[in-house]
Image 1 (tube, rainbow, N blue to C red):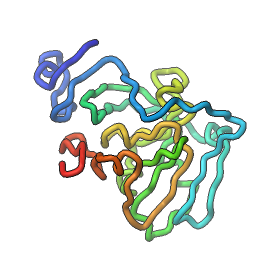
Image 2: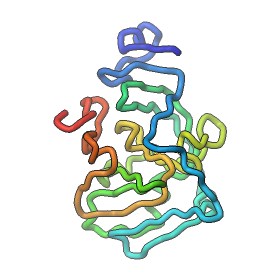
Image 3: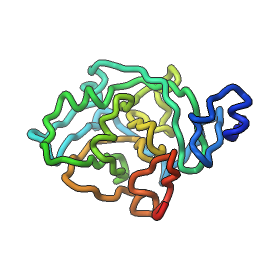
Image 4: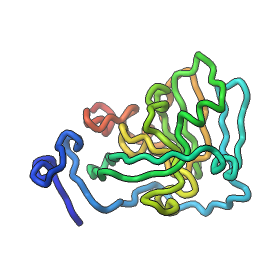
Length: 201
């Protein structure tokens, strides 16, 4: 496995400013998650948008795949200290999703919901960053099940646990509330460049 600290990254021609403190660069894509990889039946799969919205929305996988596709090249940073640079994702931008729902002005946060009851909380301004997307392809191929197929959120400016695998929907809220990992000791926000890994960081 190729490992590069920030100083070694500089020597290798990588701008060390791209590598958050305490991180190393890897060419691999480590697999980390709680529980087992879910078995997803696309005929029963749906994506639900609820909470503080004018109208609750339910989309099928075909509905999501029919939306305009976008491609992003992004650096990603895991709380377990690996960073992977220039990853290529294809899917539907968060901006596109947001253009199809009417969110109440009182909403401040979104609780991302996924298979097996997994959740993650994200402030609404962070959720709507231009680079964020719901991905179904990675590196030119369909997303692997262990990396979140059929759909995962990608929020590259926060630690990667916020980039929820096996995503199934969104609940818009007028307050912050901890998701799965946040309830279990991870930071409520999770900025890699401020090393916001755990409670108290």
